[in-house]
Length: 177
Length: 177
DNA sequence: GAAGATTGAGTGTTCAATCTTT
DNA sequence: AAAGATTGAACACTCAATCTTC
Image (cartoon, rainbow over all chains, first blue to last red):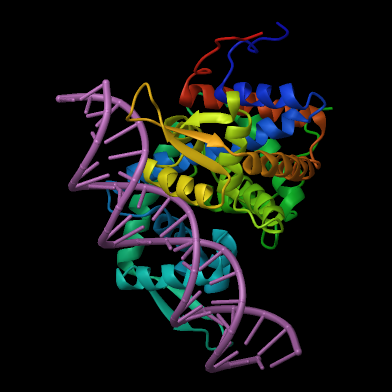
């Protein structure tokens, strides 16, 4: 029961093999992981986006809405959304404007610090977010269905290790149960 | 030697925990993997892009150049580049135009099938590609340095399993050694 | 002076429609 | 009729500069 599934090769194996041919001493593993990471992430995004298109919603809209949906009092600072979104501040401003147009969020100046903007989910936004949450979760489940629980758990743990190395540990365990 | 490193949490653990709070029976693992996958891929891209900026090269330029660099006779069909790039055909056309402007590739009509376009790397393009290959490989190595060899290998294998499920096995094992 | 959000310029992408070749 | 590449419109992002508030 040793090497159980090394026979099946993917497109990346082929690509990496060509690299080795030119630079035999190369660290092909990190290269393979780089390529696969990118490809998988891309496929996942496409999948979710496809489902969302049926509901006339963009992927980034779902991200913003869901972040607010999970927040305390359905409200978050613009800066929080910035850090959660992995995009630049200019993009956040544009997104919020669009979300506001659609009537899903409201922007208010933070009374205690007038530099900051507080973003609040409207009732319509709340309902939409709940609907989208189901759709997204369903898409994700389907996407990872080909992996068994053990592999998926392992993948989750390994990616966490990497993420902690990059971003550092969880920002604030305050209020942990 | 059971649970060796579950203590360190990442930002995604916090996000996922909020999901559980609302839907306890949720499949949080696939959700966690989804988020981490996206985040890690994003960080990696940023990292490589940052290095490339110093050489006045865009990430997509590197991708195209390297694909050609690894190809037989430094030449590939536009369709091959399309399938390798995970972007739409319109994007490929634009990219090729820019690459041609920079003097790194040449576009010729395929004599045997005049619908297709053959893309060939120029001498200047070849040299640039070689330079970029080193830079990118270096970035990737640094990025995954925090993971030990065992974990990295495991990650590579798990992602391959997923990729095979999505894209299918390697397109063409022809000429396998 | 630093932090936070906004603006505008420049760039690249997707999508649908079109054109050519088979 | 189908396959492949190109075009143009619409859209969202990044980056740098600006404005406000602390």
